[in-house]
Amino acid sequence: MSQDAFVAPEPAHDATARPLRAWQRRALTKYLATNPRDFLAVATPGAGKTVFGLRIAGELLSDRTVDAVTIVTPT
Image (cartoon, rainbow, N blue to C red; front, side, top):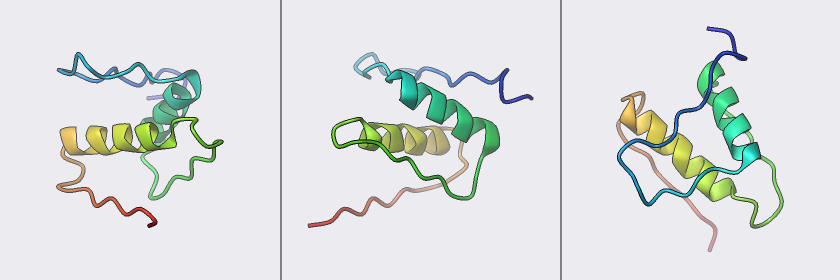
């Protein structure tokens, strides 16, 4: 499947999920199309990096690519 043809899906079964911002949709599409070992999202504070990361985690859990997710934050 070409990267241009792949479109990130909207979250299933979650009516409370906020729609992703344009940059988040593009980054999610790129991530899901390439399935990289690692991925760096750089954006200003408040731009939605956490939402983006959680969406990727949800996708990977949903399709059983991973069994668990560990979240680490600074104190």
